[in-house]
Amino acid sequence: MKEVKAYLKKHKVDAVVFALSKITALTGLSVVEVKGFGRGRGKTAGARIGAFEERLFDAPSIKLEVVCRDELVEEIISTIVAHAHTGLRSDGKIYVSHVENAVRISTGERGEDAV
Image (cartoon, rainbow, N blue to C red; front, side):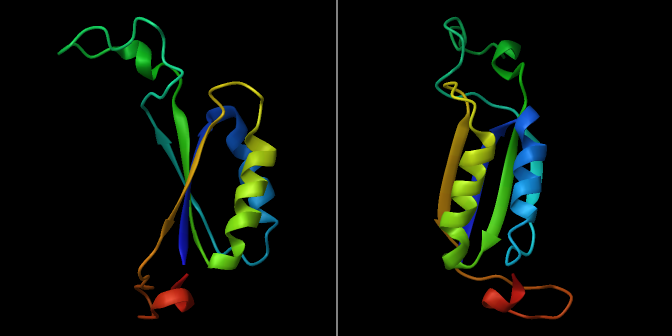
């Protein structure tokens, strides 16, 4: 099993989620609003130590999380890229990690059966 985490621009999330919902083998996903910064932060951001720079967080992003079977990873990634891409530097990032185990609380199913 794999976990795909994607950090997206907020205005792209609806298109990405709609496109992912068309992948019939995909059993679910989570969407969370997050704040942070990446390489695209402003030139003055982070210049002060000990002071919280609100400018870093002016544009909240979305973190999309999907746990899926290994064979779905490439389709999920290509779907996200196709629908989140704007061509700008701050389009976002996608990370893929191995998931050791999963447990469905309601039934006790484990592993891929729980996904």
